[in-house]
Amino acid sequence: MPLTGPGFDAVIDAYLATFGVPPDRPQARPDVGNTPARALYASKGWQVLLEPWHSAPDGEPYVILGLALPSSS
Image (tube, rainbow, N blue to C red):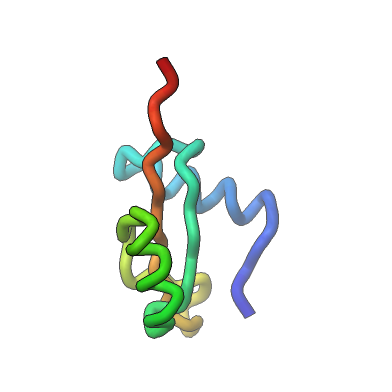
């Protein structure tokens, strides 16, 4: 079972910040092998930020996807 919740999301945001990913960028975490979900996200412009990612040392691998938000002028 993957970890979830605001505290866990903050950990993910802090980790991604080390790679220059802003915390307000939408994120999704499908299983690495979930081809239909990944295809759907890709068709909507989502990009791979990190693969594989494990929520625990012996946990299932996930892919972290991000979506660039349109800039507001």
